View 1 (tube, rainbow, N blue to C red):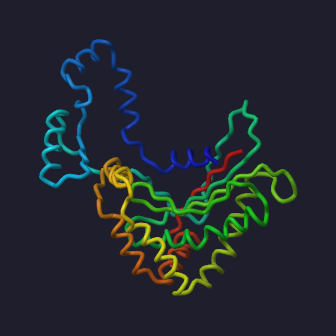
View 2: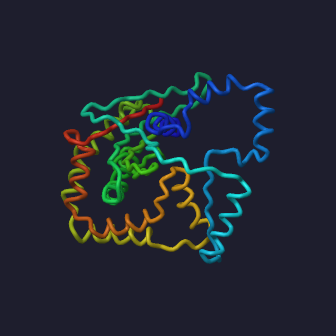
View 3: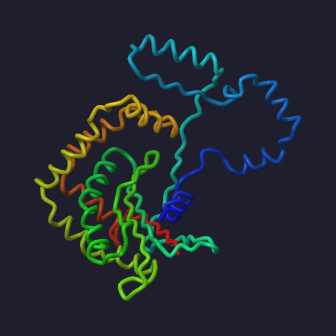
Length: 288
């Protein structure tokens, strides 16, 4: 399952820097060029194109600005690099593209796995609907593949968020070799079966009261104040790493959750996950 997730990242996430250019620059590097670079950039950590400073703690804005100025001066940071999309858009498709990830030949691993990913889009409204859809499908998916069919302990349906892009993922891993399941193709068949039959039934039964309960729990989690400084810093570092600087994203997502209707959640499923969906962007990775 970890190999599946690794391969999914390779397929959908843009590298933080251009690999070809980095490789070419590395080939040109020698002792003299390295010595020259170190001489011209006395502070190695300051020889970067941009410096981001995050100050959080028991201080007011004025004091935080002083710390920021001091840090920038010490690191000699330059201008900020503009953000660029770092998650690749999966093509629209009714037929799922498949990526095969082989296990090492010397491995004694007997497990095999499959992971489906459906990109649902960007923005707070889409993120909110994806979170609710995940809450609706998570437990029934586990029940269908893990409890009823006893496929294995690693069975999961969950929402995924990577640098502005939301997705729904369905992961199953098994080591079974019997009439129920013999390989990743059987896992894929069971996931397809769930999405074709049980998922629509669950969404048909979703009513306003159930939605309100789900939304209340999700929104409260987003609104909850962190209990430690690390909990406050982590979400902001995510924004810095992606260079989006969207500090109020969680608040907007909580507000979007509270405006959701049952129809919004159903529309997301039938547009982005159903076989005939007009915005269906699936990708499948299997490991065997």
